[in-house]
Image (cartoon, rainbow, N blue to C red; front, side, top):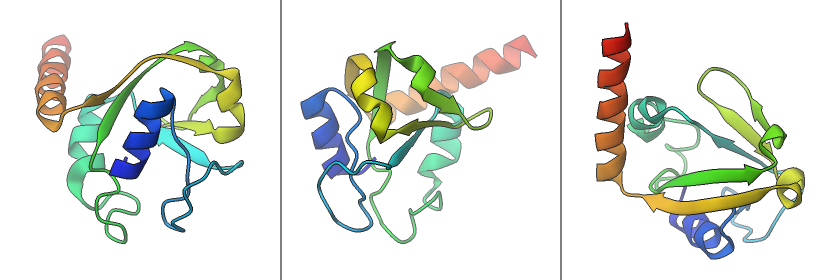
Length: 122
């Protein structure tokens, strides 16, 4: 996410929704946020500089945030093996535990561990 989304997310301890492309800093019903539970996908695809709006909006995926969903995980829809989607209208039905920024170096370390574990399992 971008720095503005990171600030809102850490302040609220829940995903912060605003349509960054339009530059409107307010909660917008009907907005969606995409997530991944795959560290390898985040490292290799999301942070590659060409993912989604990355080319039109530099810094869109500058910050990585880890979420723990305590209540309401049924409101997160799995789109494929790597992407999850949350509708902003479902946010009030959810409760989050640990919400923290994941430094890029930590992402790289955790993704390497996940990669080595997947190779060992194969």
